[in-house]
Image (cartoon, rainbow, N blue to C red; front, side, top):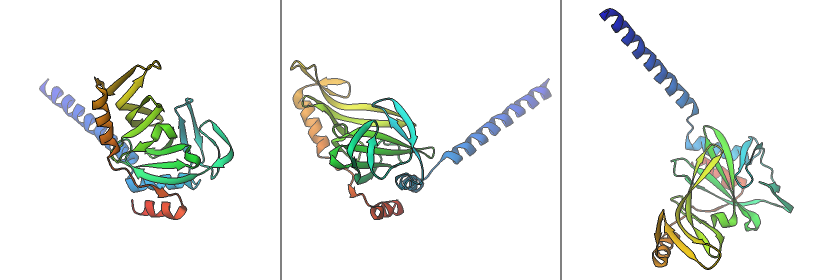
Length: 220
């Protein structure tokens, strides 16, 4: 009986070690370095690699190749094509890895490229959804003159979650509520908190050219 228990215990231990080893191998296979992530973004922008467009406005997800001229962009259509004018590199979702943010012409909005498990995902932000960003991943957004604040985002493959940092809510009848996190605060406390975020530094915006993108990828 004791020998049988010993054999069963040893077999179970070996099985656990095997499962852990397989898990480590799979984890290593999906690990990607920041420099490789930057290269994947460059490949998408050059049209050498497809990526998944994640339109959280319309709930449409489709694999695409990035066009040079944007006559269509996440459900929006333009008579005159838009282009990317600037880009910045920052850890927008605070996971320790870089995202590449592209600013569209005509101040129309932004596209965020995010790499997860060596798959590149694109997420659209209209201009009011990303009026300012800090190097800490704080984003200022606005739904109107009386409805605005700061938030953060978290990515999970094609999904994007928003986390409210502070926000001024309006019911449309000149009634306002001010929140920092989940706590309702006074207007003065809200304003002071927001002013502090406006003063924080943000990522550097760079003119979008092949040469500048090459330099950014090489320096990552």
